[in-house]
Image 1 (cartoon, rainbow, N blue to C red):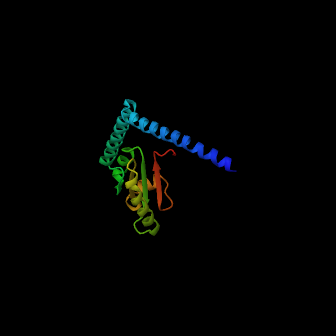
Image 2 (cartoon, rainbow, N blue to C red; image 1 turned 180 degrees about the horizontal axis):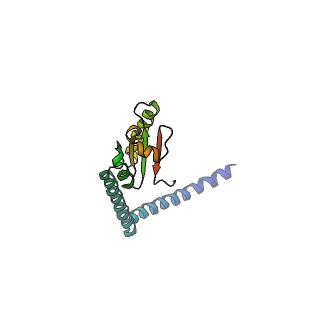
Image 3 (cartoon, one colour; image 1 turned 90 degrees about the vertical axis):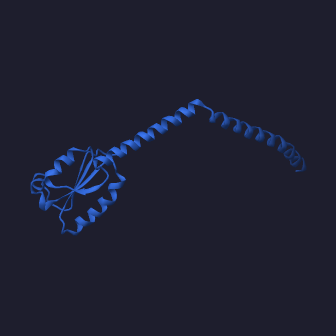
Length: 148
């Protein structure tokens, strides 16, 4: 048993030397990475992609996407065809469940700036109610979503 302890104690200094040289190599590797032109190129590409994404979000906001608003029957087709993704809520102002759906869509709209959230009062839009065969309220139509 004593011989095993002595052997273990002899091995400890050599292991500490190996660990010290490994940490020194890691420090050198980190310094080399900081000056790596490939890493700088990746960083610049990522910054450019983030800027492009921010500009895209701003363009959607300027078009009215990402906000929840009511439209008139005459403006309905222009709103639906003016954006790639549209969520339309057909509602009646006196129905409680329509108010609940309205609350949820209002909270979802700001987090989805790539979609246009609109609502249409069924009393003021008899043509589209008949054309789309809306029988139950609340009724929500999605346009442009093909699964994720």
